[in-house]
Length: 177
Image (cartoon, rainbow, N blue to C red; front, side, top):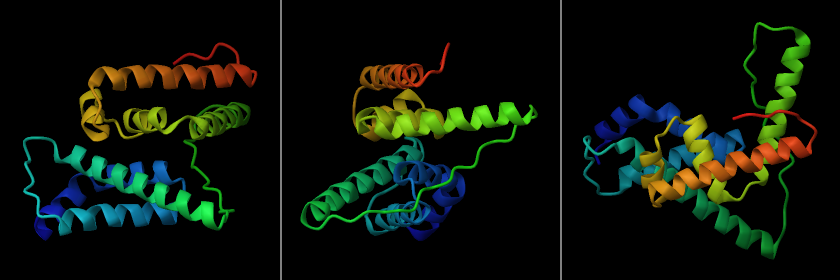
């Protein structure tokens, strides 16, 4: 890939890739590193970019694979010498036109959903992030995680069910997705 192609990709869908990195890493600094590594790896690789076959999915897949590799590396390091990260990402909540009470309840619900999502296994977490936060189609997600479309649908359904069950266990009633 040439620098011009990378620049065009960054202009076309760089914000989507960054948002995906942010949701995976849950830390702004780590997300920025992952974002940069993704485009750097694409620049270093001698790929020819096919604009007809959704290059966006290629970058999502590359970011996901780099993130998984980094998680494995961190797990090996933590097995040798454990360390913790005390910084918690604060997620901006969209302000609605409702009352302060509604805003607070919405923020509380989003915080609870985020915590439940963090506890989900990776196989459910990644498709949910791609589908709901990055607006990827089922086929794009299937290409990114290298699984059949039926598996993606199944994991989205199971992920929604686990979040719904977690919210109901926390005392929320009539949760619908």
